[in-house]
Length: 422
Ligand code: ADP
Image (tube, rainbow, N blue to C red; front, side, top):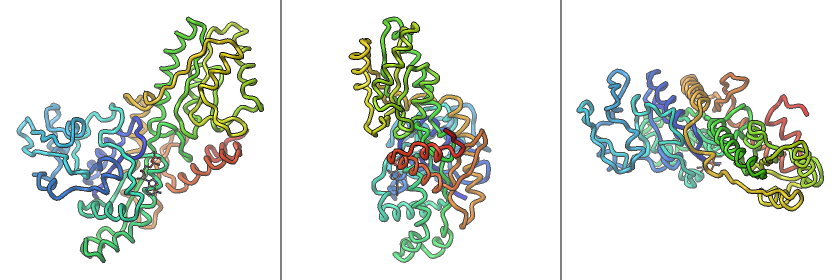
């Protein structure tokens, strides 16, 4: 089997670890491992003929049986990190291939190509948002490019949008193959060989916003970054007896804000799933913070999730919170927006472990897939790696957002966590 892995949508720490795990396990299981650069956009662009000619040897550079471990061997990481068009020469003489990534989006990789990737932030193979893949023509081209390289299985790591794209692609696959054959772009033999697409999803998202899994890849690292930021702010806040309002990411999900608040000792937290209970959140917040100040607290930390709303579903913005604290309580208040620092940096230990375990499970899932089995998303529930039907998880995630919009917060929570009780 030829297994390709891609990262798509918003980046998150741990995506490199996913690629590493999938590549290594695929090779150990006797499969060919491929990476698709720049998400679905790379699938659509594929490999130009000229770039294939440049590719002297289509074999992966290092396989376990010939891998040198002294670190001096050619490593794809250099090309991925330091530019597309670089023609890097292997310095050891062991692998006399010259590999350029120019015009190549679907690349076969070897065991050593992904060495050490688990400790690196972001995604070396790139991620993108692809408009073309949303169109049937784009997906037809993507199918053609995959068949051309002989790839029959795909691991997609991304958020709910990317996983929806994966589901659409798989559902449409037989039709796409039929079209390619009737247009004479692929032979009947190839069409029969690629009659079905095996696909599996891993959730890479800093927001932890996917239903049917306890944790998404990248969320623990983002939480860690926020926690560090709060620690840094705490010392200056208490020195000057100031208040800080921190705006944190999370889109429609308050997980990052809530857990950052718990781990950083925040005074008040605004999240989308549980708006303040009082009609006036201003009164509620001020009363709470006043109480904390009365018992001697010298600092105030308020966390506002990106998607925070009040009871009437109006957004709650950090600047407005700051004005309220300044005007009503007379606090010297500053706003800190953490922005993209939350996304980046080295993955914490859990964002290496989770992608490794889930990457292994993803390959197993592909190997066991049948034409009639559903596409699976790999999750984690109560510390056990799980397989859940991909579309069920995506639909439930959408239902959460819809329930929040309809002010049905209990329903929203029950979708996110079926065992939730008020
Ligand atoms: P995320 O995966 O982080 O939620 P997006 O929602 O932007 O990010 O989705 C990433 C990519 O997935 C899109 O740019 C698009 O190429 C693909 N995609 C998303 N939804 C669909 C869809 N309904 N059909 C086909 N492709 C889709």
